[in-house]
Length: 448
Image (tube, rainbow, N blue to C red; front, top):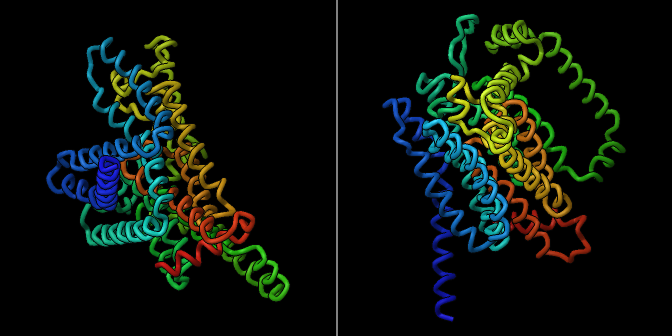
């Protein structure tokens, strides 16, 4: 009995350490970029920190939820087979890069399993921690963009010889603009959700701040994704009966408001070229359209690299090896730009069938987690919207499942859906699931 008690105490201490380390991930990414922009090298700060954190999550997760880790860990091992063979075949060693990418790709499921257990065991404490973690990370992003506006850090895009673009965007001291825009979506989703639930007057402020940061990055992902979250989160969090009440009592005003919004949208559409010129990306989009049509604007020439990379690999390697993947090294030997920057196809090219299965399993689990709790968690619908957006981004722009910055914030926001479901179940009988979200929210607000 003493041994069991000691084991539980050690596990609880490890959980506390992991939560503290998890709270620092966005800060570490920022410091990593600060070192890179200042000294020209990051000294692998973020890689070492996240390797330690992910190892701790995996060890503790194996103790708490072994079954949930079997599939992702097994697929991650299979993903190594192709790169190992290519490394032996060619004598070129790029395994370290493959290990990093495989770890990034599987980290979401490992973190999701572990933090889901934490959310079930102590939901109120987990939600409090999540609020502070997201708020602190979001304020860090705001400070980073303020430094960017002051002239510090890097630009979002490199200048192109063919395009005379005056404004190249701002990313501050973060390294990857695409990963930063996806991180902004995750943090904004949770803050907008909580603002609408608890302090509604903050909602316009957070909306404006998120849209400004997305606009400064000049990424389609950040700008359109943030706009969708700002518009749809209030709609998803408003009870259905309230819509009926508004329609019955304020029908004329609603029609007038709808006409005003449509007029504004039409005005923006008719002056869309002027808006793009004012933002500073019109020339770049026009060049992409002239080169590759509408697909050039949507995919940023990723369709070209998709065809080129798969053609090069099919000509060099046998079909049976392509089923296992040829690793980053196998493509790097043939092409200078070996990333397609579409997550599904990068994982297929590098790691074969195992990479595709890991991709499918990752999105299946997070979509199912939120979709199955729509009646018992007020956060489920907004988080489901976030997951769908990130799925689309991963298919069209990449840097989602293979992102080193995104996996932990994304996992804990999804785990929050489980925490709210547990609170709802503890506050009322199972038969009252229709009102579960309201009861859960009241309990959480009283504790906050």
